[in-house]
Length: 135
Image (tube, rainbow, N blue to C red; front, top):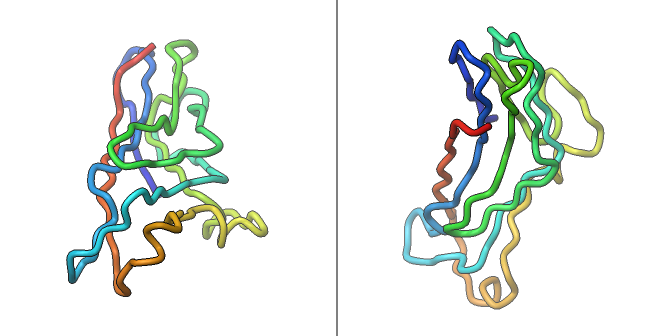
């Protein structure tokens, strides 16, 4: 789950972006999942309190590739769009039961050329989330 907010007094608008800043690497080793991507689909958003405007627009699909920024959400500068605190989850949640979305809403794609020689173990990537004032 991602939580973010716009608590400014004026309706200025913003964008939320994500960027994979470190490729998937082994947590106990040197293996790397070169060329791998992670995709988020089936967004479900909710107010986390203090919301006075319309819901921000969430991208239906967010695909993260190494060192590439991807748009997650946008709020315009009219009608206090996106004002307040918000959460977004991908797939079902404890508050929403969207059938058949839990198992396929966050996908890791490992290219065949990487999968054929990857070592077993746990892998981890770093994702940077940012919110930027934008009309």
